Length: 259
Image 1 (spheres, one colour):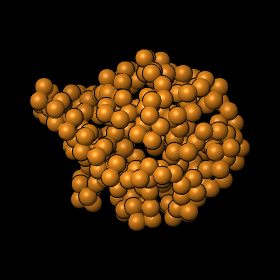
Image 2 (tube, one colour):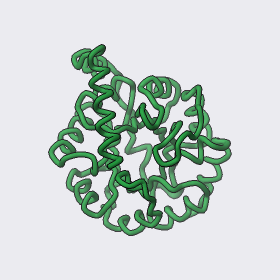
Image 3 (cartoon, one colour):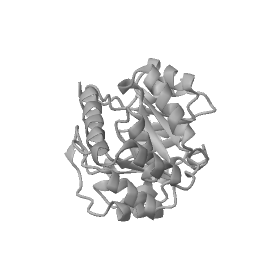
Image 4 (cartoon, one colour):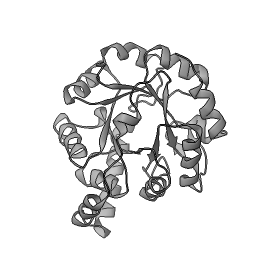
């Protein structure tokens, strides 16, 4: 199962980092950080669709996408283009990311920044805050319910915002039970890597009006944005289309979508 392998690899890499940077050191660095930015305010529903723009070098489904030698510059272009938040892939093995990418981006941009990784331990959450993250991704499918609840609470205790990602009605119910303010529906099943572009539309009405509805994956054109917007998306998360083309022009075309 792809998701299980990705999560196991991410945890193993975190354990390796902990050998040179112990938990207590990371915790101290996290607590010394200035307050996280208000991601809920930045992504709140508006008349215009909002975008979380992703710094993404590769993926298991698509392979290598872009080299991105300067992730901070890439993120700054996203901010110029109108992104409401930036997502940074920090998973090393299949996505080619790193915590150094996250640190570079958080130091450059003024919008909230998401650590996108396969988060399964408190150490990874403290790492995220120590690197300046304002949001942390939690994938319901990859976590036992008790672990999901504990990590969700810890993210909030550190002043960050959890983005709870779902792929089914059952997973969505777990996100709702947590009281998640940011709920994502990923069109890509991380267990099989298959895409279901209409999954968001089937689940969107179940998401409470008190939560921000985020559509993830399968966004390559303005028509894709319009498809998700018509289905009720407040926000779309976009990676591949922005790293393989002109990020500023592409973002502006996405943000011109009406509805």
